[in-house]
Amino acid sequence: MNIMKNHELSDIFNRMGDLLEILGEDSFRVISYRKAARVLDELAAPIEDFAAAGRLTEIPGIGKSIAEKIQQYIATGKVARYEELVAQAPPGLLDIMRLQGMGPKTASRLWREVGIESIEQLRTVLDEQPERISSLKGMGEKKVRQMKESLAFVESTGGRILLGQADELASELLASLRKSPAAGRPTVAG
Image (cartoon, rainbow, N blue to C red; front, side, top):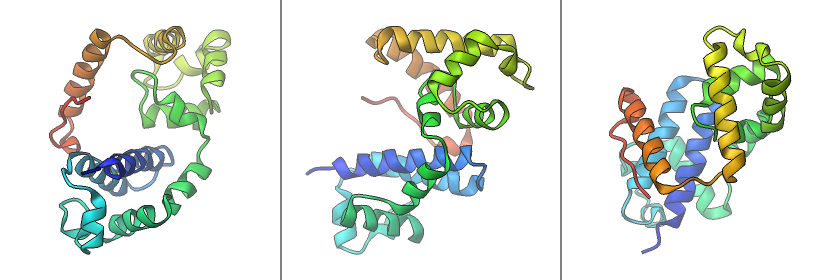
C-alpha cells in the first residue's frame, strides 16, 4: 500500500494554505487547505483508492473543491490553483518561512512592508538595515535578533539539524500549535 501521493498532496495543500495566508486571502480557505493536508497525512489508505471509488468527499475535511484538486493531481501530477498561487507570490517567501519563528504572516509583512522576497534579501536587510524590520509594529529588536540567529543556524547547518535539536524545536512548535483550535490535534512524527 503506497500512500506517497497522500503526503505529496498534503505538502501541496499546506503550501497552498501558506500562500493564501501570505496573499491575504480568506482565512476559511487557509484553514480548509490545512485541514485537508492534515487529513491526507493521517489517511492510512492511498488517496487513489478513494478517488477510484468516487469516495473522496466521504473523507472528513475533503469537500468538493479539494476533491477536484486531488483528482487533478492524480490525473496530471499538478494542481492548477497551486501553480497560480506560486506565480502570485515571490518564490523566496516559502524559503523564508523555513526559518524558525517565521510563519506566513511575518513573511507576508516582510514582503509587503519591507520588500523582502528572498533569504538573501532578508540577510542583507538584517546585516545592513535591521531598523527597517525592528521599526515595524510588533517586530522590535528581539525579533530581529531571533531572525539573525535562525538565519545563522540554517546557514551553518545547511538546513539540517541534530535529532535532539529537532525534538526541542518540534516540542516548541507542537506547544504553539496546540494553542490554536484550527490546528486540531497535532502530533510530532517522522
